[in-house]
Length: 274
Ligand code: DGL
Image 1 (tube, rainbow, N blue to C red):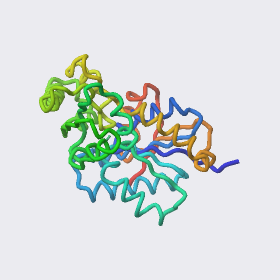
Image 2 (cartoon, rainbow, N blue to C red):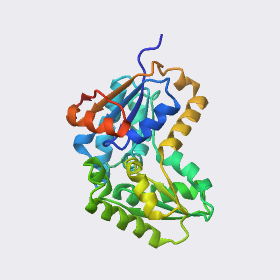
Image 3 (spheres, helix red, strand yellow):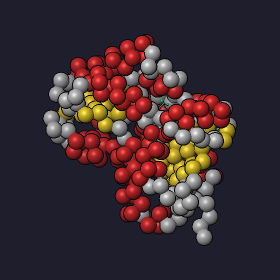
Image 4 (cartoon, rainbow, N blue to C red):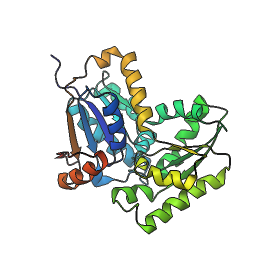
């Protein structure tokens, strides 16, 4: 029998739960460990070096828990840390382990969804400034015109559950309008931050029915399924007892309360200090 070998899912905070939920729904047989670095979130306005350092710590922790595969369910970490970890750190830590991000799977799919070939990207300052979506979409959908807009207030609003308050709604409205003012032909908006699906209905209402607002969770889940089919050497290592373990760098009491609201069922997280 295989030694406990779960899939690790990492996010700066609660946002990655929107990816975890979809992945777990699509691939329920596997074991999962979710790690939220809530104590140090948000990552969105942090420097490249800090996001890389924090993300590498998280990946090493998940490897130490037995994960052969870690998903960075955070665009900011995927944009700023994934490549360095894959190319520089993994060969030294363990060349048989894998770390995957959320930007590549999303940009592979998003081009196919737009009729007008005009796409909008909403993300954190870190993700938008990295231009990762512009670069990747150019590869997979070169004919698509991409406009992006950073929403630095959204993750704090979501982490602190203030997005329903009038000031929160005002920020959301301003940012969605700012994106749409850049290009009136946008028919598809990608939520390039795993926190944003929490406010998807509000974004959709502001954007209007003629625009489709796309969350990454289902795309990432679908691509992970394809990855596991294409990589039987990884798939064979993963254990399948349908277990879920949660870690947070914040107090587990706070995490449990908020995560239960995200997921719709109670969780009993463990604390991990970095
Ligand atoms: N969920 C993270 C992302 O997708 C949020 C980043 C942050 O902590 O600012 O980018």
